[in-house]
Amino acid sequence: NVTDVIYTPIKSDATRVSALLSGEVDLVTDLPTQDVERLRKEPNLKVLDGHEVRTIFIGLDQHNDELKYASVKGKNPFKDVRVRRALNMAVDREAIRKVTMRGLSIPAGIMIAPGVHGYSTQIDIVQKYDPAGAKKLLAEAGYPQGFEFTLDCPNNRYVNDEKICQSLVSMWARAGFRVKLNSMQFANYIPKLLALDTSA
Picture (cartoon, rainbow, N blue to C red):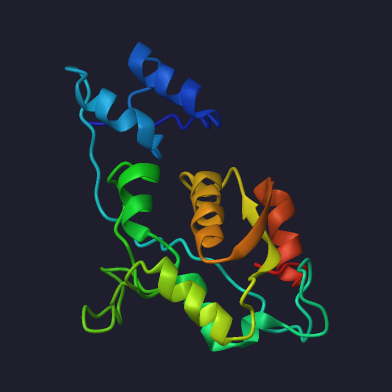
């Protein structure tokens, strides 16, 4: 029986894992994905994992008539569904699952996660990775040479948030998008997002 619980915030992933291994703490959450397999092999530890209802997504500025922090002037390419579809087609979700998330994620086709009211496998259809098709669609939208925009990304809020953004930058480049990654602390990210002072 548990009679007391002492909650000790430990921001650093490495320090949190060290505290667990040394016995300083009995339980940790949000393990770094790179440490999960190693910790599974520890005889005195039990790693519990399961599905979360968190969906990581990229929001695109479809509000402003001119896209901020972009090479396109006088209009907003993200208002064109072909551009948004091209971005979607250029994301290799399986690579993110296997490499970036080390098998600890599920590719999503919709915002609603399994386990949340309203989820349906009938509409959770993951876009097939198709960088060549994305490039073609981008050209059809009037951007045969692609264009540049900035991706604002938190680097201390979600599991592997910055690594996911780095993966997206390289994937989108294969389709013709030139993306500047602007990583920042979550405390700086949120005001920027709420002020719509972002392109993505």
